[in-house]
Length: 128
Image (tube, rainbow, N blue to C red; front, top):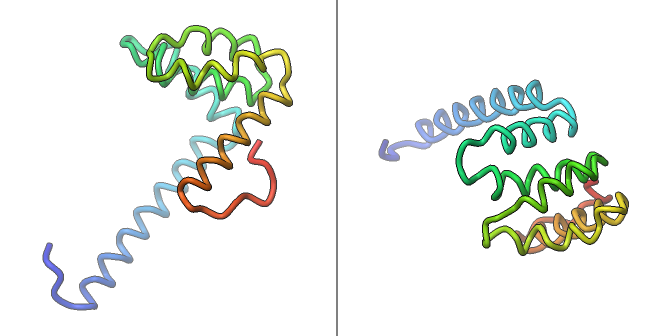
């Protein structure tokens, strides 16, 4: 659609905001807690029939499990990462498997680094 008037733009922006709001509410219902998010990424990694299971999805499942305090599960997923593009990201967490606080600290460091890279405000408190 070609821009023609400010009213047209305003109406399109309002519609986009409504869709975003509805999607946000849907995600809030689907994932009411971090444990729900962790369960989702773990299930996705376990049920993946392709190489994504032991790759990014395995990494995400390992990190989510570690944040949730399920360090044995985190170890299983992170050791199972086979994709060379991901193993370097998983490796630092493996040395922290025995220490839940240090594991979460590493995640918080990564969150802070990524927020800085994206030029976002630092969080007032650790994410996890």
